[in-house]
Image 1 (tube, rainbow, N blue to C red):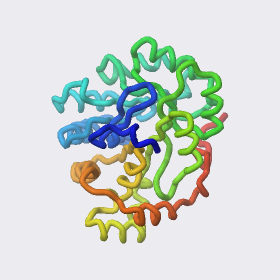
Image 2: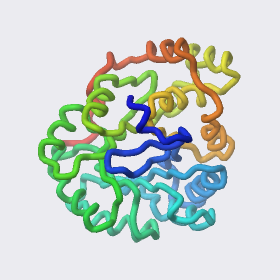
Image 3: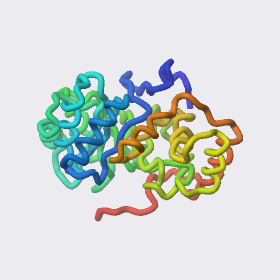
Length: 278
């Protein structure tokens, strides 16, 4: 990837619209809308995170907002993502509700959670949400290369981000290439395979060589490509572990070994199967 897209301190990526997204964020998928989520967000911000990723479908935006307020970190220092639930009809109306639940005036990134009903129908509403100041950047999630082509053909404002499942085991190289060609930042969710990839012998071997944990190796693999990552945890020690990524580098051999773990044949698809009806 063009490394000039990464900021000088190596901790953020400059999006195509000029906004900056921190390379490491906390994901809160499946975190309960109560103290579990509040504490995870507060801990993450206390530990130096400046990027929190939630969604309307998660049902925990209110707890994300409460965690932000309890942390004492100023709103302007935290990059907040939420996602439009495409089972609803109006991205603008849903954005307003998200802002109310979060207790903020805007989100930094607002993305279509998945391409239910087709990839283009919601995009005009996403653009309107941005024009109204509800979101500074807009993007998509779970969109494959063909979905992106269709959105780009119809868009006045192109998506800044495509958030997809991405890791050495889901190394969607053709999709990454399509994003790069179109100035879209690929962002990785489930970079640890929801924990499955932590048991990999290859990852453990590289972690041993590096004196790091398997989670840190998997996350650093993404960062070496300038790919933002949003590992999910509600455990303070794991949240802390996932933040310690900027004081080591993987070798070319490490990266090649990890690249070889791919099980997607370098696909340009974002998903192996749809979980929605369309």
